[in-house]
Image 1: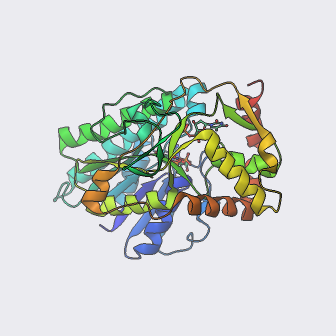
Image 2: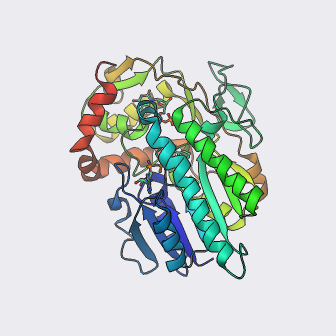
Image 3: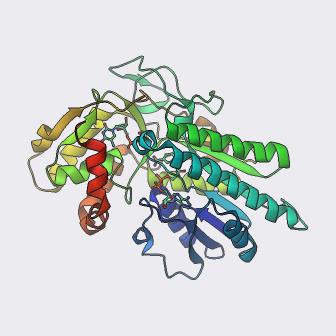
Length: 370
Ligand code: NAD
Ligand code: TYD
């Protein structure tokens, strides 16, 4: 594999994947294809932008001619597809944008790859289409142990008896997860119908540097810093399984190179947290690192109207990935959250650039009157 398109490389997870591939594989040419929506930010990649094995192309994955042109121009061998609309709350307000980018965009990439690869003498030999998806396609798990219980599957407490497996039936609830589920089906259909060498992975919630502050952890770190209210949806009892973003990028590297064609792999942190508990950890950490007294900002917690259709619990079982390819999260959560909070506090300029301009309007429309 020499020439790889990574879509969505200017976003949160994509920027970590681009950085890893550009630095680790100097013999590869990495083409970052990104439309630079509100969520795309080239300053996420400042440290590698001058590398000779890296090219940025501003383009829309829905533009078939442009994508096919890039496949031909760079003689592309592999696609790692991360570009998407990714925020559940936005999908509730504007589902069409999610169908366009996540469904039609993925289909456009698949079709362009098909046309190009089928035109080559070797066809699909040595090619790979790797689609990055989410555990949210599986729906929601029940909270059968609201107080948590110890379990062999996780170093932390778990909040239910069931976990998402690769065989779990799809049951998406939000427009976001419905659009991702649809795109996953198209990817598998291109394998089953045309023989395209595809792989799909479904990952749990990521956290870490460069995440857009519409998602829980960076939004709350920024609000605590500025002593703004912390809008906790419902009772704060929903459970998410958190994975440090660099560990997701490591998994993508291993799976892209060694994963079996047509397989699905679940990627997770074995790290379940109730929202309210993780919020308390974030408050304590920000307070400590800012030299405030620990817990001083607990009074910022503000319970607000719940998200519509709010999935109760996500929990991934990534045993298959561990057993087959030897991947495991490298960081304990305590270490990951400390690094993350420190990064946002040390990179206030990055945050200020994002939260100037349009961001206040977004914030108003999402949270005013909630
Ligand atoms: P993000 O919103 O931070 O970044 C998305 C990127 O895609 C941005 O750079 C944006 O400019 C680009 N993009 C959007 N529409 C585009 C289009 N039409 N053409 C080209 N580029 C476009 O998202 P993220 O959190 O980094 O997620 C990346 C992928 O991982 C998504 O597919 C998401 O579904 C999946 N995922 C995310 C998480 C998570 O916790 N963030 C967990 C599991 C899976
Ligand atoms: P989010 O980061 O949006 O990820 P996802 O919805 O994909 O899991 O939200 C994580 C959890 O935090 C989710 O249960 C919703 C909750 N949440 C809040 O309570 N308040 C907020 O302002 C946000 C953005 C999320």
